[in-house]
Length: 234
Length: 234
DNA sequence: GATTCCACTCGCACACTGTACGAGACAACT
DNA sequence: AGTTGTCTCGTACAGTGTGCGAGTGGAATC
Image 1 (spheres, each protein chain N blue to C red):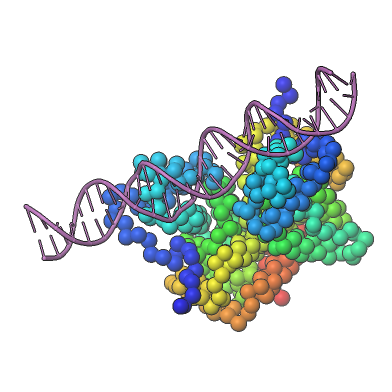
Image 2: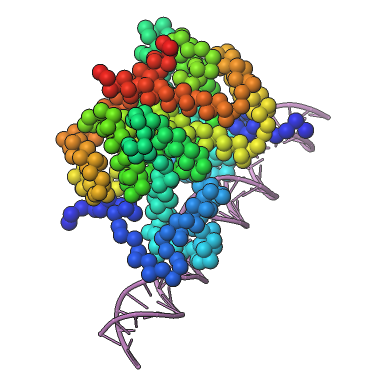
């Protein structure tokens, strides 16, 4: 009568894995390969089973349902991000900056993660490790109490909010590859009646898309870090 | 031979809608009701058809596919956000702040939008209207050239990145309602071995969840605005 | 008034999804 | 030898988006 358990993979022990060869890790690895190759929609239990020379429903021995599997691969994403330990960096800004760049890079490298990353609570060991390191970094910076969390959340929110649309753009381009020119024409047509937008569209003409985004990210990141620093000195 | 068109609802004229009663608008309205009631997964063409006393496939006369329908309801979301015109506000900060609050409020009111909002290019009339107003506001603030876009993107990125996890938390809670207490216990158990996290978890004990998030949002927003202002004066 | 045409509706079918169920296979322990 | 527990998987079910093609009703044309 103690109420329902919070249902997450991380609240349950994994199957012992007496390991003939199939195990949770194996499944997660195969799932990530499939995700990298075919995206979030490309992952189905049947395909994953086939990839492992197993029946689709065999996987349900190791994983309660597909959502649990996604929780597992999701945490793997956090494992690929780097938060440099304080010894390696002089200022907290350096740590924060390195993390932000790494987070963006990981998401862009695994575009399917953009569809997962804010969507499920991040309670896996890797996510907690990152959260812990980030916490320590901001604490070292001088933040106190809840503001440590606030600062960390602000940073990750910026990266998330920036990267998700980037991924969306990339995927729209991938499934419907059209040259820069006609894309621009389409957007221009849609922007008719919004002179401000058209003007800025023309300004960016010569620049490469990825380069513009790089600059945008650098600009926003600098602003966020400045903003956090400002919260610190008052 | 001019290459493929960019495929988006906004690139095509809507069906003339001789309107016996069924029309694009009607369908979009019904879709939003269904989404508000049952969430993103609750929207299926069959259910939507039933709600309109129509066969599922009848809708395909007005909409090329489900994705197009989602593009339409997605733009509706932008229509509910408010960007106060410059006359009504004294500083750009006020405009930006009002927009950010409004954006967050709209997303929280239509949680399903969190699954759409960064995922598809925002080329609908409402989205462009918002983008235009935002552009003008930041131009008025003193930003120039591409930095106008950068500033606007930074702001929306922050709101997006903050709100998506909020929605995720709300939905996890909704489908698996457990009291604050056992939730905290679960998270504490997961955080074992991360003293920094545990410490902060305990600090936030008395505070209400929604209140904490409100404070977090205010903190982050102030930081972002400060950061943007800093970019401006240099 | 008859005919043609077109806007529109919708039942059926197809390929696909996640996963509950229960029957079997194999190894280890009693 | 028998029992138990771990693990595999075929089958089945309810659900999805949507292509196709036949059907309907009203307006326009002859």
